[in-house]
Image (cartoon, rainbow, N blue to C red; front, side, top):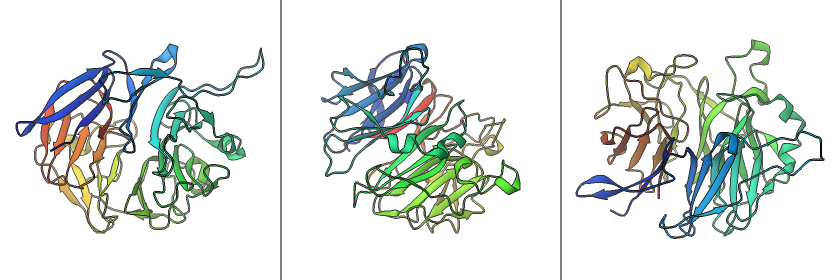
Length: 359
């Protein structure tokens, strides 16, 4: 087994590798630093780690040798403004995604402050996608769990790298057919239960927590929304709500099977101020029929007095669809080798986990 697990935590970047039928910690980098996001680029093997350093701003590091060495590269930043004026700033890098296979070196970054950035040189330089930043609707975007809105999900169509679909919390779903030159809303069928009824269907106040696309069928998008689960079969033109999904339809994370668009995993929780697992039992829900029914998977997971929450990027599935990894806010890391039917605790005393990725 050649799989590696990269884990972005509040106290550094960890790498776990298989060993003797289990997993062991093989490497740690950026000890003590909050790592908000990571990318293991499947096109060339480069690793990217985004650090969230508060007063010192976001930092970005790149490795070309599987983490043996790192070099700091420019972080996405807004263009400078005139002296005496106060311009926007990047608070955190919340999402990193590679461009298409035909775009070597192209990277996309979603940030808190709502800016989308593109690099065409593996992160040596970044440009703000001004066409999205200048949309008049952006004035209606709201902060979700943060004070400012943020772009946390970017889906590049593997059939056509010019087609991008991204999700904003809170700002809805946006789609481009021309590599970001122009944009349109794609929220038809979504609604926001937290708004007055007359505003519930407004596109700009929708709060998708996480959006993923099936690599084998990029038209199929799954969204864990603030007030439910939604699925689209036409790249977001229309959304269908999933009314029932085990103990709760609230949560943050979602993963989709790489070859089966009807198969997706979620982690149910209690919403709003409470923010704990549903019934304080950590469970994963899985659908294999497009949301018509759900399996509730709990073998190997804590089933009482559980406080583990799984953030937006805290769940991942590998290219086979059999291996999953899940990390929680209380520093627990689990792996499943049977599509979620059972889970093995890899480590239980880690810092809070922000993101996990196979690589």
